[in-house]
Length: 142
Image (cartoon, rainbow, N blue to C red):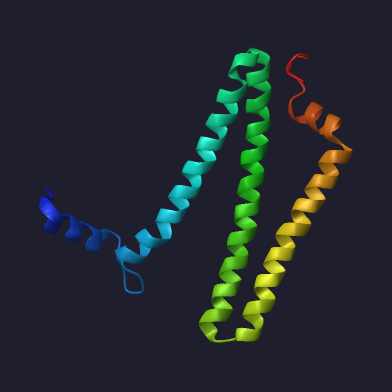
């Protein structure tokens, strides 16, 4: 099957990215911010490594080890925020405006409490946590 020109692209998008409840334009509108967000996260990691690259191999290794933890934490926070967004959208869609405000406040509070808990645990036990996660790393990397 060969797709040519604008008409072919529209047919492809209509056939494969559209359904009864959502069309390809809405999917693109949802997908674009996620793509931009991931691009910024990738650029942040690239800048981290670029800034420290002149300090040596051990420093680059240390930054990359911590960046993997950062990526995991970002994913956790995005998951919690996405769950909160789904709940808020369900209340908004059903017309329950008082619960929209409560659900949004609860989602923000959940992310805040989760970040506070993780911060306190890591601040209190950073050395044992790093030893468990990266126990085989050399001392100069630590």
